[in-house]
Length: 98
Image 1 (cartoon, rainbow, N blue to C red):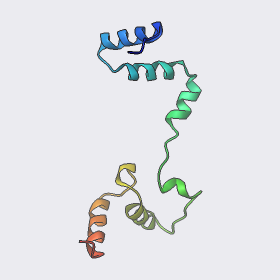
Image 2 (image 1 turned 90 degrees about the horizontal axis):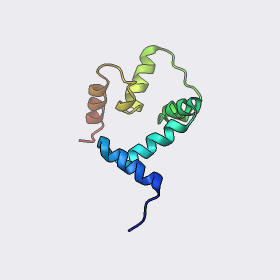
Image 3 (image 1 turned 30 degrees about the vertical axis):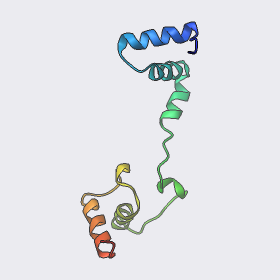
Image 4 (image 1 turned 30 degrees about the horizontal axis):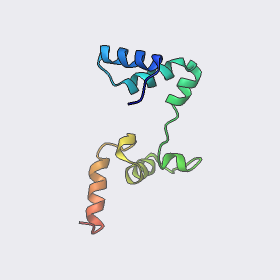
């Protein structure tokens, strides 16, 4: 069995007291020591698949933009218009994939 350092034992004891995984507490402590500017930069740097693949996109109309979002973007990004999920399902049925 590996012997824990004093600091690791303290973290493990604190984690046990409050009922969380010691690894989560270590991650929190490491994040807390980072400067706020760095924490904010890390927090807001989320890669958005497909959206980040081109420097820009231009559409002739809002309808074109919404159609492109419904056809190309994953649902979890939140860019689909109302009914976009149903439209996507209808298109996949029309493609003969079913």
